[in-house]
Image (tube, rainbow, N blue to C red):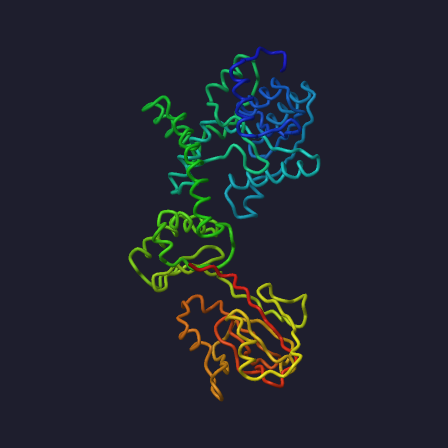
Length: 462
C-alpha cells in the first residue's frame, strides 16, 4: 500500500490536524479500528503513508451478515498480511449479546467493540484507539442529536479525542476520502446493512443530509464548523458555571433554589442545572419538564431518572436518590464508619461549670458532644422511621416526633425520606444531624471524657 501515489494535500492536512488536536504524540502506539469498509481503509492507508507511528489493527466480526461478515474479515487479514501489520480479531454474536443485555443492536455493537479495543490497549500497551469517523459522520451525529432533543453538549457531536479514542478524520469529508482511495487504488468492501434505512442514522445519511446538501453544497462543512463552535461555547459555560456552583459530575443529592446568586447568573445557573441533571441520567424531556414547572411555580410534581428522583418543593428543585440509605453500625467499629462522620474523644482535665460547658460545646450544628461514659454503644446511623421520637436538648422531660422536628425545620417533603438519625444500642435517638441533639448523654460538670461527633453533609444546596 505504501508504493501507491500520494496526495500531498490530504497528508499534510491530516498531519496538521493530529498535531493541532494533540491526538497522537511521537511515542504513541495507535490501534486502528478497521472494518474493511471505505472509511476505515482510507484511515489505514493514510496512516501507512504518513509512516510516523508503529500501527496495529483491530477488527471486530459481529457475525451479523453471514458470509459477508467473513468476507470483511478475510479482506482485513489479507491487507494486514501484505503490509506486515499486527492484527487482532474478535468474533461475537452481537444480536445475542444485545438481547441478553437488553439494549439496541447499535448500542450492543458499540459496547462490544470498545470493550475489546480497550482490553487490547491494556494487554499490549496501545496508547490510542483510532477510528475513521469523518465530517459526514459528525453531521449525521448532530442531526441525530437535534432530532432527539439536546443542549449545547449535544451540538458538540463527536470529539476529536474522547479518552483513548481519537478521530483524526473528523475534519475531512467523504469526497476527500473517496478521492484518496481512488487515486491510490485502495480496495475496500461494502457493508450491505448500510443501504438499509432501518436505523435512524442510516435514514439521516440517505435522506436528510442529501437534502441539506441540495439546499447548500457546503452544508456538511457548516455543520462540522457548528460542532467546533459549540465545543468552545460548552467548555466556556462549563468552566464558568462550575466556578460559581461547583462540579457538575457529582453523584450526590442537591437542592436548586432560586437564590440571589442564581438570579444574578441565571443563564449559567440553568446551564449548570441541565448538565447536572443529564449527568444523573435525567432525559432531556425530564429536564425541560422540571424547568417549566419551576417557572410556573408548581409543587409536588415528581420526575424520575433510573436512580434518582426530582420534585418541586416551595420553588426549589430537589434531587434525591430513589433508594434509601443502608443501615450502618458506625461506632466504635471504625471499619464500618459512615463517611459522613468523624468520631473523636476528648478528656476534660478539670471540672467545668455549666456556663463553661456550654462554651466548650459551642461548635456549631454540625458537631455534637456527648458524655462518653453515658453513651450506650454501638451507635447506628439509619433512616428515620414513622413513630421515631427524640428527647430534644433544651426540652426537659419532653419528647418530640422526628416528623415534627423536620416540619419545624421546613425540611422538603421528599428529602425527608433520606434523613438519617444517630441511635444508641437501645434504639434511642441521640442526634438528628444537623438539626437537633438529644438531651441523653449530655455533658455535665461531672463529665470527664467527651465523644465528639462531626457530621459532614454530602448534600449541596443553593
